[in-house]
Length: 304
Image (tube, rainbow, N blue to C red):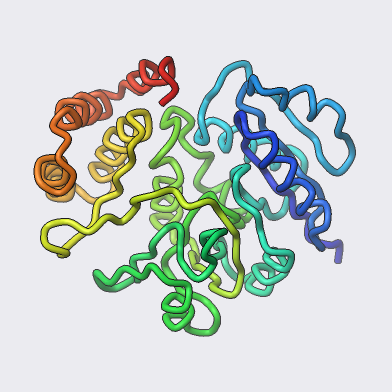
């Protein structure tokens, strides 16, 4: 039997030093067949530097910045064109531990699975908190995630696209990520689509990807009864409000949409008072429900 072909897809935009660090690690990663880099029209010299690479690392430059969603859409399609059996998806700012891929490949009966994403400055803490399946418990520490594992995995949850593996078969069944989402919510939508198709989804706590801290994801609110994914970036918030509304409407129904809107009102009136975020959120949500995925472009002009 021929060896399984595992191709990494890396999406990058204007973070050349981080990309160089990541590619150095990937070149040393056992069982990895090659790396496909999708450059989102970077302006910091990334394209020129990638032009000097060949062989194990190949690249394509998009004509404009399509965000993570567009990058993974095109990168995943490219990987399938190249005959990949498994695709390892990641942003340019992550850094898999040397044994991350090998540890993930110990669980090849899964369809869509990934590592813990931990803070590179405090590796015991999760960058992306995990809501454990079957309840409302959210864990923020790697040790708590490890304790929740059964047979080395936490079934039913994965944090895409930060070092996740996806099988060729699953991509052929459910299609590519929604490129129009740009950022924030495209990865979650892809997981929901995978779950709807009956995919075997899991997190492997023994596998780790280091990642810079991204602030206040999972900020407690409503007297600690729930959390909210706050970001200081208007670009990210607009995309989150729009894409989350679309995802909840499609996969969970109107009661969940209304609850999300209530949480947004509460958060920006009481938890982190910022009233200007409320009309922005309304515009984003309405745009998403109308199928308009262009509104985020106004925030690109001021750097997000």
